Length: 148
Ligand code: DQA
Image (cartoon, rainbow, N blue to C red; front, side):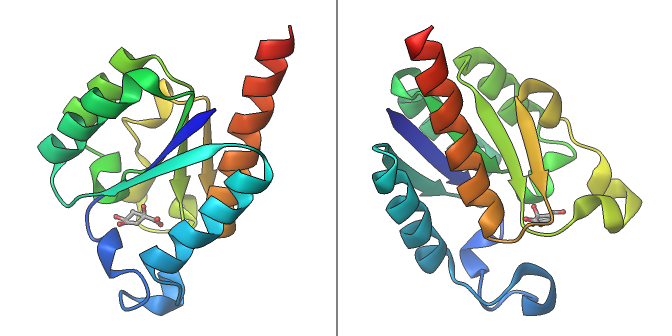
C-alpha cells in the first residue's frame, strides 16, 4: 500500500504562516506524524510539496500510477487548479482532499473546489488531524476492497 501526500502552494510555510488559522506545526513535523500513522497501518508514504501547479502535475504523473491512495491539500489551487483536477482524474486513484482550516466557514471563494468532485472525500477544519483521518480512511477502503 502506497500513499502519496501532496501539499500545494504556501504550505511549505506551515508553522510560520498565520498560525491562528493553520496551526503551529511545520510541514516537516506534519509529514512525520503522517508517516508514523501510516507505518502503524502498514502503508508506505511519499511526500511532495510545490508552489507550482505544473510541478505538482509532473510529480503526480510520475508517481500516481503506482499509488493506492492520494491525500492532497491543494491550498489555493482548490478553486481554480483545473490541470491538477484533470491529472487526479486521470490517475484514477482514490483521493482525499484535505484542508487544515474550515474552508466552509471562511471567505466564500474558499468553499468552491474544482478538486473535490474527483475525490472520494473532503476533510476540512480538523487541522493536522485531517491528514491522519484521510490516511486511516484510504487504508481502510483499500483493505476492504482487497478483501472483497
Ligand atoms: C487551505 C485553505 C485554502 O483556502 C488556502 O488557500 C490554503 C490552505 C487549508 O489547508 O486550510 O493555502 O487549503
